[in-house]
Image (tube, rainbow, N blue to C red; front, top):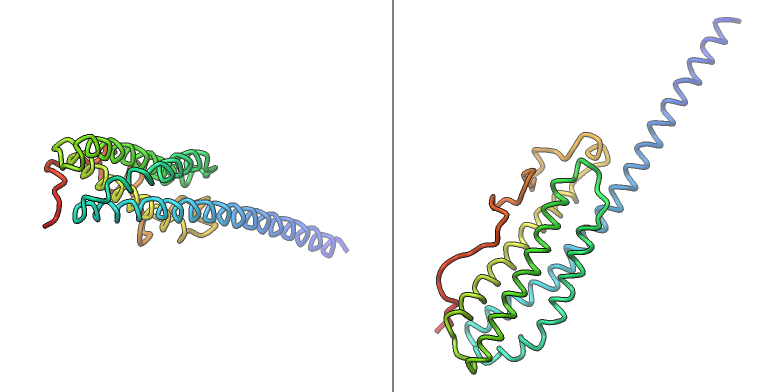
Length: 204
């Protein structure tokens, strides 16, 4: 009788342990799914704001006459980028994803600064009546480069998070993930904005 009682107690303890682990796994799964949905949403909207803007900047290099149109349409893109920065900073991420969270927040902020730089360049060009004034050229080129970099680095972090499993929230992001983002910063090393020399020259 005592043996059966002991077995029953052991089974009960095992059942409780398994149930607890299943509950933890379920909680981690739901948390990861929430994070992945949020990050995917920000990544998608970041692309919707940045990609057309970069394409139009490239277009200005070929057709300078579109400066007024881009200057007129830039405001909504800037507003969206600012909203995405707030969302990226507000993401509730576990400690295992702290580095990726910092990268994503930094890159949305970089995109905001880049769009502001583009706005400055466009204003300067309009003041010069569409001429490719040197300061405007530099602002547009730097703005376009930083928009591209922000989009690429944020997307890389988003792809890494999309490949994670619930267990990674406890163990930390896998160092050997295919698109892993190095902890502590973006893949471009220095967190400062890109500042390449040379004018934003129109294509002939």
